[in-house]
Every structure is written in C-alpha cells, then in structure tokens.
Length: 428
Image (cartoon, rainbow, N blue to C red; front, side, top):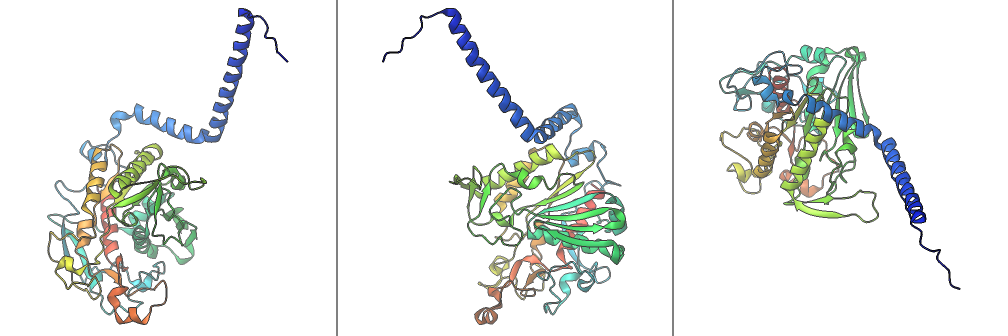
C-alpha cells in the first residue's frame, strides 16, 4: 500500500515546524524547571556567593594580606609581632607548665592515644614546649577560647591525626565546663562535643580525603585499594555548612604509593569509570576542591579556615642515623638535627600545598606543623595503646613490628599544635 504525501505547501510546513519548535521549547523549559527545583538551593548558594565575592572583590584577601592591609580578621584580638615565624623554633624542656593537662583528667582521649594507661614507663614526651625563634607563643587561654565560641561551631575535618588534634583541643577546654554542662556524642562520621552553657560545639568530621572515597566509613575504613571520587567535595561539605571555624587536614591516606585511583562518575554506577594519576595531581585536585568549597560557602568577614600540613611518621630509624630495621619504638629523645626531614614526609606534597595556597585569594591560614613535629620521634604512641586485634606471639617477641609510629600520645605533641592554632586564630 502506497501512502500518498500531501502536496507541499509552505504554510503547512511552517505550521509543522512551529509545532516541532513548541514541543522542543516546552521540553527544554520543563527540564530547566525540574533542575531548578532539584538543585535550586545549590544554585542559589553558588551564584549568590559568587555575586557577593565579585561585588567585594577588592576586599577579599588572604589572611596574611588582610593583616598587612589592616583589614579586620575575624576573632583576632591582636597580631603576631613583625618578623615572628611561630613555626620556626626549637623544643625546650619545661617541667613547670607541661603537660597542659593530665591524661587521667581527660575522659575524651581514645584508648589508642592513652600511652600512660597502656604502660609507657616514661613521661618525658609530655614536658617539651615549642619555642619560636626570637618571639614567644601566646599562652593558650581556655576562657578566651570558650567565650569566643559562645553560640558558635568549630569543626576539625580530616583523618585520625586531625581527630587527635580535636581531642587535644577538647581536653584543653573541658575542665572549665561543669560536668553536667558538657557532652560528647558520635553520629556516624560526626563527633560533637557540646558546651551547653556556651551554646557552643566543637566537632570532628571523618573525611580522610576531604572528597568522597571508598574509605569514608568512620569505623570500617581499612581499605588498601583506595579510590577517590573527583568533584565530590559537596558529599561531605554539606555537613560543614554553618561552621564558624574550620580546621582541615588530609595527607596520610594519600600515601598508598606513587599513583592514586580517581573515580570519574559515581560509586553507584553499574560500571565504575576509574583513572589513575600521580598522587601529587590527585592531591592538587583535592586541595583546589577544598578551596572552591571554602570560597562558595564561608563568609571571610565572619569565619576562619585553617589547613594543617602533614603529620610526620617515624617508621625508619635509619633516617636519623639509627639501626636498620628500627622505628620509633623505645625512642625517648628528640632528633637534634635542625634540618632533619624524614623520608615518610613527601616533599612533593608540601610543594603542591605551597603552590596551591600561594596562588589562592581564599582567606585560609596554613598551620605548618611538619618540621617541628619531625623532631619528635619520642612522642608517638608506639606500643603503648589499645591494639585493634590480639597480638601474636611473634609480634610480642618483636615490638618494632607493631609499634604505631604515626599517631601521638596525649597529652603531648598535638597540644602544641593547638597552641599554634590558638596563636593564629587570635594573633594572626
């Protein structure tokens, strides 16, 4: 059967084309309306913040620039004296003011960090104080800190090393708060310490890569084949919104080798599209994502953001001239070589951090704790901690094999990190 086409008519063609155009236009408008409803809040956040940033472009400086230009820095009560680098200095013995609290006095320290409770025989590691060259650190003032946090949120975001600094911070404050006016609760990736009388919270959020990864479970995350999802900062970032003081860190979990696996799609995809790149490029991607999130979500006139550099480990005693095959186990003295830099601290990552932060106009304060912590082979938890699983006889016969040379005893080194954080918060 042959179907006859109607004779060609320009007017009928125009009508048909108009019909098709209307259909296409209607479909496009419907799609735009759907996306706007679905992601409207994100669009408003992004475009609203961008417009605010453009309108105030001449007022957005890095923290250092704001201090130099006498622009008000949130929470500042003074400034560090000219020429004083608080991260350059030496460790001095102090039996008068150290430790800043006793291990037994702070119930919030995890058993993985309570070295005295688990049999460490010495306390020397608790009595060292960081002394900058040519200037002094302000004394940590717990009352000032709590008053500053009144009605506000402070959050540490990162891995277990940032959690250690978070716990140290809580230990430095909690004695000023009555027992019935404070609490600590954990909700999946989020741990919240509440100072009720101050209507303040100090929080820790588990995100070892900052971006979404297959290691995001706060309890079960021992995965050797680690994968990080590109462009996924908002997966965790939605939990950081509304925070007044943010302290980021990320390093340890990137150190799985010279390459890193990056997911281009979603972890929910039926077939995962994964590419491999250098650890440095992957780390740079995460740093830039973090800065982009800060730019779009943090008000530089009201909030402060910090980034803590890599925490060194001491897994190879040969680095400091010790016997081959040793590590931090049985080390009770500091490394005296002022130029010492352990092989576990990848300088290429520090270069990425310097490159990214030196180019940004996002007001973020860098806490450079790496060099000063490199000297502290004595301060790790070593074998004096709660073990994740029962030790074998073979391990017990060779303590070096299970010594933890990554994490730090509390009280100890990380209290000094918080003194540096305090100094940069109030005296930038």
